[in-house]
Length: 222
Ligand SMILES: O=C(CO)[C@H](O)[C@H](O)COP(=O)(O)O
Image 1 (cartoon, rainbow, N blue to C red):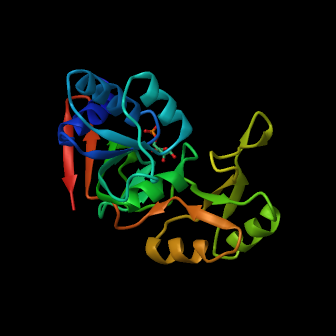
Image 2: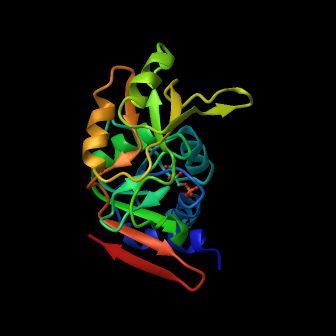
C-alpha cells in the first residue's frame, strides 16, 4: 500500500474523544484528515485547528469541526508531515509553505506526531533546502542577512513566475545550508533577523514519528 497513506491513517489511532487536534498540511496528513473524517462521521467528537487554508478547506468539506485560537488555548495533539526527520526527531518543515502556522499550532500542543514515508528520514538535517518565511518588505535585504549565516544558496520560492505568497501574506526563501549540525542555534539565529518571520526548523518539538513503508508503519519515539 501507499506508505504516506499508511502513516497518515495510523496517526488517527492516537486521537481520542473530546480532543482538540492540530491538523497539519501536505500529502501525508491528507490521509490523516480523510481517515479522521470517517471517525467523526461514526460519532467521534473532536475539534480541529488547521495549519493552512488548504487543510481548512479539506477538513470543512469532509465535515470535521474546526476551531480557532479565539476559543482554544491548548491542543491535545497535532499531526503533521515533515520534509526531513533526523534520528533525534528534529525536523525540517515548510515544503508546502505552511511552516509558520504549523509551528504556532505545534507549539501550543501537548504532543506532536509526525507522519512521513521513509524517504524523509535522514542522518542529519540539511539536504532539503530550509524554508524561511520572510516579509515582502525588504525581502532582498533579509535574504542577504540570511546568506551571512552560512547559507550556501538561496532561492525565493515562486509560483506561476511570481513570488509564492504564504497564507500569511509573506514570501518563502528556500535556503541551502549544507549539513545542519546545530539546528537549535540556526533556528534562533535566523529568527533574530528582522524580516524573518519564522523558519522551518522544528527543534525538540516532535514526540513521535510514524514512518510509512510498503509493508506497514514503524513508530519512532523520543
Ligand atoms: O511542512 C509541510 C508543509 O508546510 C509538510 O508537512 C511537508 O512539506 C511534508 O509534506 P508531504 O506530507 O506532502 O510530503
